[in-house]
Image 1 (cartoon, each protein chain N blue to C red):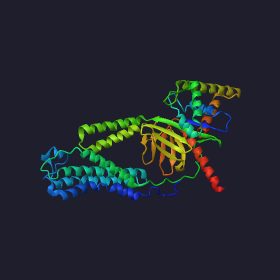
Image 2: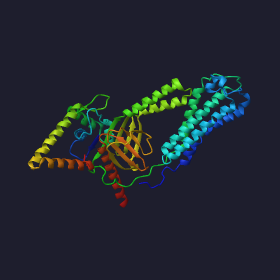
Image 3: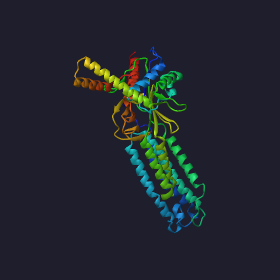
Image 4: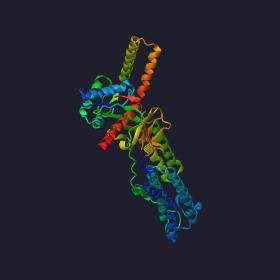
Length: 126
Length: 331
C-alpha cells in the first residue's frame, strides 16, 4: 500500500495518510482483508508522529473502511470493497455524462478510456 | 551499471577451497585413525549398522574403501556446483558452510565409531554422547566455514537514473512516500510441509544417520518460516522482513538498484532469500511482480497486487537521489 504525505501541504498529515489508504482501495491496490502497514512503521518511514498516523487510521475506522483491534494489524473491511465499486460506478457515470455533453459516440468514449488506461500504466501519480 | 566485469571475484578462491577441500576429511580421518590405532581395533569394522549385523562387518581396509566413494562424489559435486554458480558469492559461502559442516559431521561419525572400538573384541553399543558430539562438531564446522569464507564482495554501485518507459511516481520535492505490503505464500507452506514429512519418514523408517533427516527437517522448517513476508519501500531502500523467522530483515539499498520494473506474472514461483541464479525474492505466480534490476546482475522479485506503485516509488526515489547527486557533482 502506497502512502504519500506532504508536510508543506495545508491538509493535515493524518488526513493525508487516510487519503492514501482510500486511494489505494479506490484503485484496487488494497482489498478487503488486506493489512495496513503498522502505524509505527509508517511513522518511522515518513518521519511523522505515531499519533498522527493513528489519527489517520481512526478516521478510516470511523468511515468503516478499516477494522482496528488492539494488538492486531489494521485490516481493510468488506465495506471498503463495496465503497470502491460504488465510487468506480459514480466515476463511470460522470464520465458518461461528460462524453454525452461533448457529443462523443460510444466507440469514441471507450477509445478515450482505453487510451487513458494505457497512458496511466506508464505514469503513476499519488 | 557494472564497473567490474566480475564483481564476485574477491575471496572466490578462498570460498572454492572451503567448498571443494572438506570432503577430503571423509577419507583422511578414518585412514589416519586406523593407521594410528590399527593394532588395538577388533578384527572387523563393527561400525554403524554393522554393529547390529556383525556377521556382515567388513575388514578395516574395506571399510576405509567405502569412504572413497562419498569423498569422490562430494568433491566432484561441490566443484561442479561452484563452477555453475561462479558469479554468485552468497551461494558460494553457503556451499562452503554445507561442505565443511557435512564433511566434519561424517568424519566425526567415523571417528566416534572407531574410538568406541579401541581395545574392544567385538561390537560395542554407541555411547550416549556420540550423536550430541557429532551435532556439536557439525555446528562448529558450519560456523567456522562461515567465518573463514570472509565478507562477501560489495555489489557495484549504480549511478544512472532509471530508463524511459518504466513507471515513475510523480513526487513533488517536499513529498514523502512509503510502500508496505505483507504476503502469505501457500507454496512455501506446502514445500515446508513436504520436507518435514520426508524428514519424519527418514527418521522413523529409512535411515540410521541423523544428518539427512536433520537437513530435511531444517529445510522444511526454513520453508515454513518464510511463508509470511513483509515488503517495505522507503528512503532507506527496499526492505524484506520475515516475521516468522525471528523478524529476519534484508535491505536492498538503492545504490545497488539500477531501476524497477513490473511484469504481469512471474515465469517461475517460489524463490526465497537465496533464490536462483537469475534472482531472489518471493513470487506467487499469480500476482504482478515488482522486479528490481540489481547491479550484481541478478533481480529481486516480489509478487504484490500493486507492483506498479511499488516500482513507481522505487524509480521516483532513484531519480530523485541520483539527480541530486549528479547536480551536486556538477556544482
